[in-house]
Image (tube, rainbow, N blue to C red; front, side):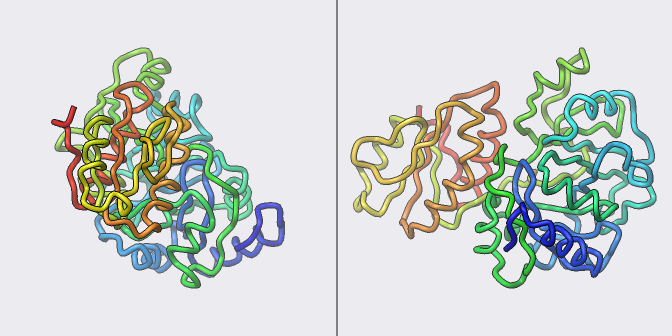
Length: 329
């Protein structure tokens, strides 16, 4: 693991990428498993490490919009406006694929996901590497994403020898994915760039739900982001009842909004959506490591900036073996 201030570490990471190796790379959203997106063998290593299905596309990370040549066959006006407003940052644009985008990266689709990350260390690596990096989240497929370098090391150990340490991820959950490949702009995965923010830039409504004919994108499966501990997503009053009724409350961990219930063991995250998102995956990982029999998660507020948080928690609950209980208050 290398500190972000070590210039030699950046050179070592770039050298590893040029050899076709996979590295751990911080972005402002989550840490990624980065590989040369034009090296088919390197891309296959990413899939093998994650245990990821071959038809599940990867997002290509670029230094800036000027690097789109070859990756996107077209850059529609609305996509350009969104890029100008939100790049570098936590926005992925789905565009018609160009010659550089292989089937291995796109999952055999005629579209490709492209993003310009804001993290200074990711930018430094991209600048020196000079190409696109395929960089899905650095975790086993379907499991909780990493937001620190130590999370990546915990997940993969020596299988990923180069992990750049860029500190905690600022955003903490994955990017908003917006499909600009067709006639309508639509959100395929919510993130902290909200539908309202997109509409403010474009000056017109944006579709907030994917259609059946939408491109496949990362993070869209019903079960995803999941801890290994069985998890239930409940309203506050239902959570308190479930905790009190458990035959061994000491074996239960709670993830709460704002404050923990009295005498409960667990973690309370901030009551604002951005603060909550920043700490969500680290909290899930810490609670998962506690060896509890059950994880009870308080359902956060609805709407606005909370949409992406709800998306992640709902999929995590399915992946951990319990659907979110939406009838519980």
